[in-house]
Length: 430
Image 1 (tube, helix red, strand yellow):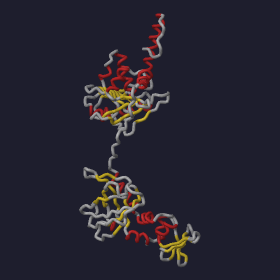
Image 2 (image 1 turned 135 degrees about the vertical axis):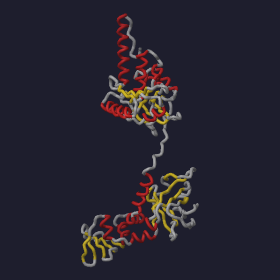
Image 3 (image 1 turned 90 degrees about the horizontal axis):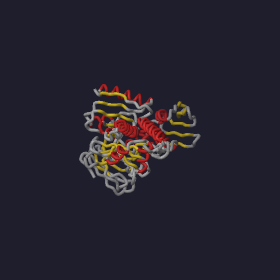
Image 4 (image 1 turned 45 degrees about the vertical axis):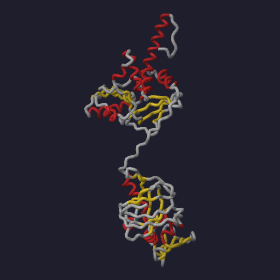
């Protein structure tokens, strides 16, 4: 495969003898299509980022897309495998392209190898190993390792205590430091550093690819969900049922409660889990969750928005409103948003989708972190023109307030029944 303005000969590691090079002039910045070994992978775009004459010819691999653009390709081909290409220069010198890193081709032509082989040993070992040498007769002796000698040509060397010697830096790296030939050339010529610099420059402004939300599988019947939220946490059953019908709440097959946040198109974009077993509760966000789309109970026409750290706090606050007013639909008159913690990440998106909101009520936890975050958010959104006020719970959070309220209500009811001589109801009677 070939494209105008560039040239390539692609040869897989196992089919190198059978592939025929394609020769064509090209220039820095041009691109070509190649197939990377193994031969059954998708076609890939190889973009020339530097000419081999000037900068050792660093290349980056792209996967082709239907839109005509590209994305960085993951590992295709074994590290250390190679393809044979012709560089897009007037010399058309055959070159071998090595996989040294997952997304980087390092181009090493014969000129680069020859330059590396003739690199001054004294200078290289001084920079690479920190060795220093002194002249003694017709050789240079290493101060740190006196038995290491470099001849007057500054290329031939011999390490007497180890009984090994050779010619040039490449021999030293392969025999003493046991580097493969390709790695030795890369170390001397600096192509690895050049490639890393190119990758950094290309990827620093590239946005992270959006991850898909992975929702747990639903259970058949949400029995543990009702038991945990309604009986143990005291949340109103009508609220729970309505949220289940809207798909904002469900029980997974492991008995966890799943709270779901949606985007403006009605797609699930955030989900958090809450365990229902034991006292030490399991909590986590589902893989691929985007905290900009928090769990919320919205009233589109409402000017007031209550902010909480968790979905259970928001549902508890709504349940307290029902209990205080005696109106089963009272909680629908205002919006409630879970921030999934103390960060305000979910707030801008909600306000953008609900322009009627101008009154923010901060109902975060009544602890140092919650109070500090409430102050930060209040100052930030006051400066933006919103009315803000704090409504801290009496206990740690609004579920504490709800369970305390229900406990007092049960105790009061038991006292009345006892006064009338009627048997007191059980724990779950209200």
